Length: 209
Ligand code: ATP
Ligand code: MG
Image 1: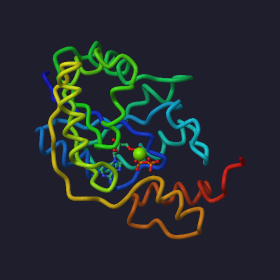
Image 2 (image 1 turned 120 degrees about the vertical axis):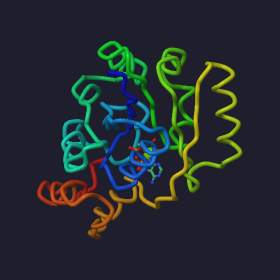
Image 3 (image 1 turned 90 degrees about the vertical axis):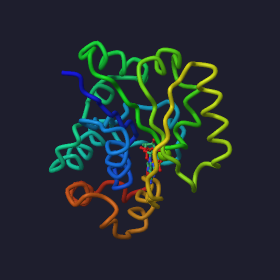
Image 4 (image 1 turned 180 degrees about the horizontal axis):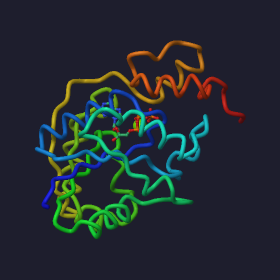
């Protein structure tokens, strides 16, 4: 079957309603049949984050809990079950090979798009998917975003389409900070994710330097 598959990659540390809303908005905007949530493996880009990144399988489990109960979403473990760095270009190749007839839409926020020129093998990456980008106003200047889209299109033949989603003032960083300060995260993440975080006491203790 020729499906239109969305892929929403992220650290998901932890996954939150912002992620699910952009997944839903992208599915509407591009008439997607499904949205695959793709928790990253260990990311060398975030290796120097001051609070260490949560284990990939923990982020995967939270993502599965977030996807439960919404038939649009599924979760891929391609990246988080692999050791070492994983590259989106390789992941998209694996997905394309396993289902050559379907088309892939890689969904991303503007802040992530701004870094994509430095990702591994951008030629392959952009040849395998349409990129759907939504603006994240607090994090990216719209003028800079326009320039970057033009540059990626010109340089790599990237096909980049915008979609809009109301500003969602949630980030994983904000959730980690609230948990460190002992504040509630209810309403920011799905209930199953909140329960998992509480039960496992995640993010409450600052990581050792
Ligand atoms: P952190 O605060 O740790 O950077 P994050 O909330 O940005 O985490 P990521 O896992 O880094 O989450 O993001 C995955 C993808 O979701 C990225 O493309 C990012 O731009 C997008 N995204 C995350 N939160 C939002 C949001 N509130 N609005 C729009 N896009 C978002
Ligand atoms: Mg981020």
